[in-house]
Length: 284
Ligand code: ATR
Image (spheres, rainbow, N blue to C red):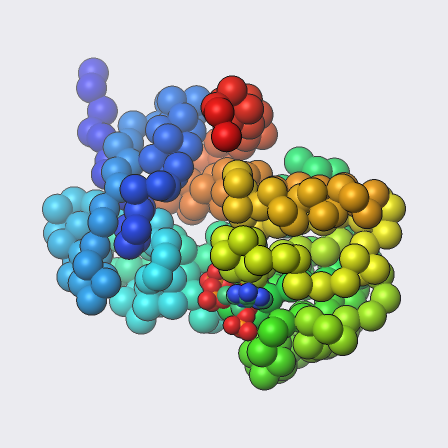
């Protein structure tokens, strides 16, 4: 007997580069879930229309990528606590009663990749989060919830780091963690984990913090992957740190979205290993 196929997509502008369709297709294959996952390019001023059209066409849910993550919660009827804290969502689910639920799985993906795939404990860790834009905002709450003890947010524009500290202060207090804001130049000391959440690697600029933030064995994580992350990874390796790119975060945030929609957890470590092997074969 044939089963109905459910429709999902990733919406963004640009969206052609997205690996999400391939990742979700593989998850579906490995879990036996029946779904189709497309790419949808929507006009910069057409996100709300794109979402409503997709839902009207029978879409069951979508991922949201640049530049719509902060607009996404405005369309939802129910936002998770993570979305409220981050002010951004990357996953929407369209329920049969017409309600739209949203979540932000980016931070969960980062935490899962660091703790499960890289095997690095966040419980009690000191963390330097470089950047205070949307990418940093999306992961700060989950880093706190994973048990990071001290988190310093360093950003070119200090006021944005301070705003993130303020919006997460109550959660940090509740968890017994400490948050600090800093300029890039003023960061001092070294950290167990350094996370690059700036767009600086995309622009090909130098790593914006002093190498002394790393010590041998620190985890140095770039939320980008591929050529965009290479400068940061090389810099980290030269300090004796353990470099890691954001491919695992990409797969794990997709796995969280898949579980949010389908109630089934896909074998994300297997899919990450497959993707790493595929990328290693591609010419740079
Ligand atoms: P995203 O959603 O990827 O986080 P964003 O919200 O535009 O994008 O944030 C970009 C982040 O990269 C910010 O922290 C930005 O610093 P500012 O807040 O000072 O703008 C940081 N960034 C971008 N280019 C940078 C550069 N050349 N050097 C240092 N930081 C940079």
